[in-house]
Image (tube, rainbow, N blue to C red; front, side, top):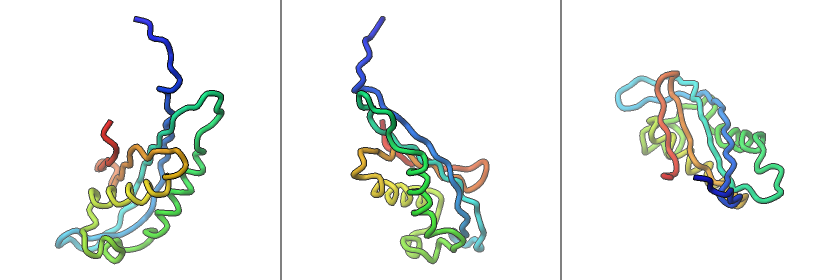
Amino acid sequence: MYRPTNHSEHIYEVGVVDFFNARHAVGAETIHSHSWKVEVRVRRPRYLGEQSLISIDEVKNTMRHIFSRYEDQILNNIPPFTFQEPTAENLVTYLFEELEQEFRGIDTTLYSLTVWESPTNYVTYGLNS
């Protein structure tokens, strides 16, 4: 069945992948390093006549701003991981909250964030929709 297009239902999604290097220890593990791969997906409505939404560079710069705090550091020494274990699940949740604050006020929604601690293991955190 044909359904007319309603432009108010269309959204853009921009995805950016970046990396940062940091060490951590969980439980009784010894401190070890990861090259944390992080994928951010942001969404924004498409407005009639609009040519662009948010630049990929803007998303990447926001990510770099947040990640620079962790680059070449031991996560266990940086709050909130001084009292909460720096598991991939806790890291993805905290990074999501940090980035979500950065995107407020620019009519862009952080939809999901995925953190890989290895090429085969990842955790995704995001909106339920």
